[in-house]
Length: 337
Image 1 (spheres, one colour):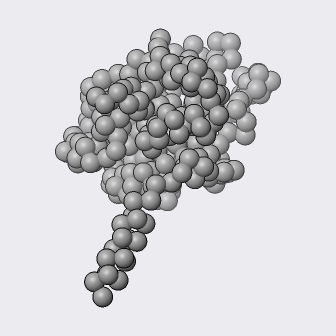
Image 2 (spheres, helix red, strand yellow):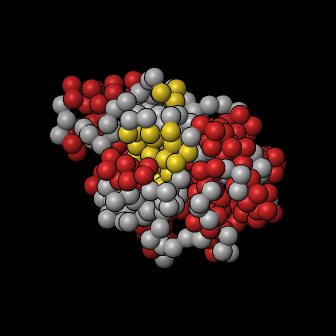
């Protein structure tokens, strides 16, 4: 009987310690997303030369030998990849001399673990926007760019992007994270490589994220939790049409309008910072108990954890009817430099 118990125990330990091979680890899509205050992005293309896949594999503690064997890379080719990632500040060396990501790599298991806590915080945090809704609408009505756009039509942009995301992130950097995004080459940005289902129409983990595209003196933005129709946010022809259309619900925001959006974001800022400060001990505990504590910084971890929180905040505001949102919709906006 003892032999049987020992045999079963060995099977159980073996099953629990199973490590996916490289093919299993990379079987789904991995998508690169960045967050910055000034539209910064990596100077290298992470979708080329297996760079994002190398980040994923280093995160999962595969050795250089295993990675080179899988991709059939020579020592020279592998070292060039490592140099590109290191030069961009996306990997670092441990005390043991191993390379690990200095950015976030989030697979399904890790993302769902983050969501478990972030979702409950996001539902709770939605109460701040609801409580300040009258002041938000009052400030909205004073922004010239929205003169002909009903609040309901802009509700995802205002309640999602302005008061929680793009226009709020500089305040978050100053008041809560107390640091700018990390310097990477000549740029400053947070970066994550996120696992997503193949041919999934939604962003990884359903996150509400910003995409930006520069066309001449205009920055075209796309905010939502669905993929854009293509790599392009908007075509030059579409932009020209929007600029001429007096009845468009896509706001064209000059410097004065953008300043008013900064002021609008500040309406909930004290309550938002107080809420996050009350949970700072929880955030630090989650970070220190995660795989990321040995890879990236708390500020980078929190920037992405916050994206999970506000995604659930958006979903809650949608469910309660404060954000008018149909499954096929997203929001676009144009910034004048």
